[in-house]
Amino acid sequence: MTPTGSFVRWGVLALVIAAGLIRGAGWRGVWPAVRITGGSMAPNLAGEHYCLICRDCQMVIRYDAHAPPRDGRVVCWNCGAGNDHRVDQKVRMGQRVLIDRWACAWRTPNRWDIVAFPMPNHPSRWAVKRIVGLPGERIEFRRGDVVANGRTVRKSLAQLRRMAVLVHDNDHPPKRELELPPRWKRKSSESRWHVEGTRFVFQPHEGEKKGLDWLGYQHWPGYAGVVQRTQPSPIMDNDSYNQQLSRRLNVVTDIMLACRIRIGDGEGCVALEITDLNDRYRVELCFQHRQLVWFRNSDELSRIPLPRFAYARGVLVEFAWCDGQLLFAIDGHPQIRHEFKSIEGDRTHRRVTENRQRSDSRDPISRMAIGATGTEVTVDRLRVFRDLHYLTPDYVDHHRNQWLLGPDELFVVGDNIPLSQDSRHWPRPGMPIEQLWGRVWGIQ
Ligand SMILES: [Zn+2]
Image (cartoon, rainbow, N blue to C red; front, side):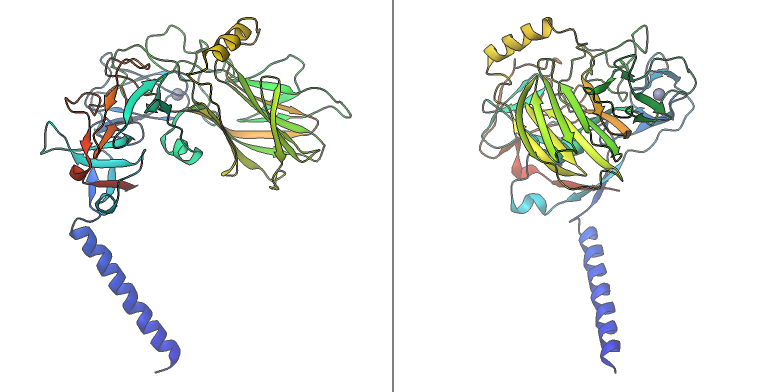
């Protein structure tokens, strides 16, 4: 036999053995697949649900099959249009997830991992929730953030991406009602920004050197019970999955903007801005000086060399204010992760900035903006996300409750925070690590 033939034969044999091992592992329950039934991990993992396409913006809306809206109206989370719930429509099965049973056998799983375990009050039933607190920690919630042993837990951008909830996608504008106000609005009547479909193009005048020309984001409520769907609203902790649940909604300060930016030949600058209700944070990409400069209000905090990417072809940028930190990435590569000390503790700072806010003429509801100057800029794929907003069982987002975990216990909470029954509700909040069945590592 030739060496090539031998190589092929051994290669095929290795593949057959590998496939057998993988199948065997599945059969023996090492990586079993389970189907989600309840809605406690929505909207990230849906249980049995209904699904419709919004009549106005064509966005997919999923909502709980166990509790459809009582009035038969399903409000689109993206554009606020009311849709009819059809009583005869088919219930969609819950998503199937793969469980890695080895992951919890060798080590304590990480915070924000999704794990499967038997329900403490119904051991015959399995539950899937997210790990929020680790062994020995004292857990509380402050303004929707998780606080462990008195310190705010901060996510990386990759973790935020996995958990964030999409609240507006500019690629799905309302098409049936054409007279609605724009979601991304030019801040001046002489603005050089113009709309091309779902793209925004900035075209400076020849030789014109002016300050940044801004497009500001306007959020709409996207929940039932408001008179006007286009009424400007802060970003709240609602989503479409459980619209029948009546509760007080909370303003979410942790938000993320993602979009694609392309620039022309001219020397210019693109800026992104987010406010956290107290301060404005701005990142400027200055192509002329090849610098990335960022600011809090008018104070320059830092400048770093602008990384070399193909800006003329287009780059994906992500900009977030989350867990008291500023996050910024270009094409998935983190450029800024800056933690601010002042989130809860520094009340003096908060008072000062609140006073500044009152005397500020800016619209406090418009919390995101994109600016440009000097060069042609095209912005598209604009999406706005919010972080998960943690609440106590009585739907309050500030610390009334504290939970203390034992040395081998985890605090687990479902992503559908108002609905989920979890560590916040159990008589003994900690989930013993030894009872974990495994870690969710994939969706089928
Ligand atoms: Zn819609």
